[in-house]
Image 1 (cartoon, rainbow, N blue to C red):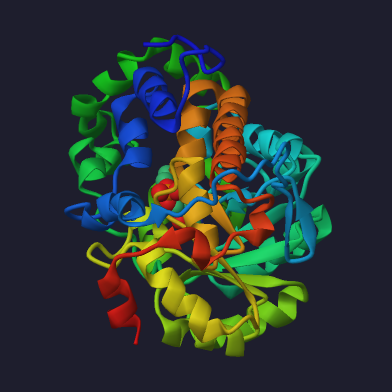
Image 2 (tube, rainbow, N blue to C red):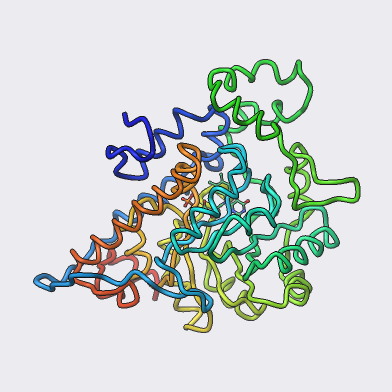
Length: 394
Ligand SMILES: Cc1cc2nc3c(=O)[nH]c(=O)nc-3n(C[C@H](O)[C@H](O)[C@H](O)COP(=O)(O)O)c2cc1C
């Protein structure tokens, strides 16, 4: 196995995943890797790309291919954004700043989760590219309004509202690894689970130097930043409804991206609620297990929206070929979660940069092999989908 993220033997995202597994304590690695319940949606999100076949145009010579596109009017070097991933500081010191720095250097957007361990101002300052802020209503309306105001002042250019988290999904691996006990703060309760950290002394040293168990500096309650242990209860008390979108929109005053859309009906509702873009997402299979993989529902959502707003997709993207298939089926761009979180866990900023570079190189090569000069020219004529996809869409 390669030893570092820059090794020539790191050729795909699965290699970064293995490096992350080797460096991180089990609880942290499985927090990234796992999904809800039986992990059916998690597996399907990835597998569904195998159902879609590419249809190349041969003998087309494209010496260089164009990967640039725009999302919400912002020019991006490639149609891949880094989606919101909570608790990045568990994977690398100041993990959110490391990831935003890599995203900015690669010419793409970093989306910062509300549930991050680094101050939103520091994360924005670390990037020379655009950043978006992902909002949960943890702590209630006043707390969210304060975060919105800070994000605006810091220069975040869009607000991502995640609507698929009325409660946290049941991540069985987290239970088995004792996440609840580890966050209890009670030494005797924590004791049976601390071996995971002792087995990774280098990670542990870096984690402690970075400040140890974090709180959430962007969720500022009257008594101070929200402690880590309170996150489950906070999510349950802060489900976002369509009515909330009205005051969120008024407070933000800029583009809103609604993340967590699965159906044509919700897509139309999001457009009516004033979204500038939507993300077809099932939270990477971490919330409601058993929902369809995102690529499968993308065509239905794209048809429902009818070009009124931009449609993005996330879930299961591990290769540039996956990005190509999503773009062919109507996504303007994709977000990745685990693909870069593995890189962050494996090697911090360099690991995230490597993850983006792997996807970028895959994309360029796939476009050349397809005989398509630009990501903007990808359409349904470059893929074939199983016949029942057409029948079920009628
Ligand atoms: C470790 C982890 C933490 C996440 N935290 C958040 C979050 O705080 N907010 C959010 O909207 N989505 C969150 N997500 C979901 C991602 O934004 C994205 O929807 C998902 O990871 C896409 O699937 P993929 O991991 O297969 O790319 C998280 C995903 C992971 C893997």
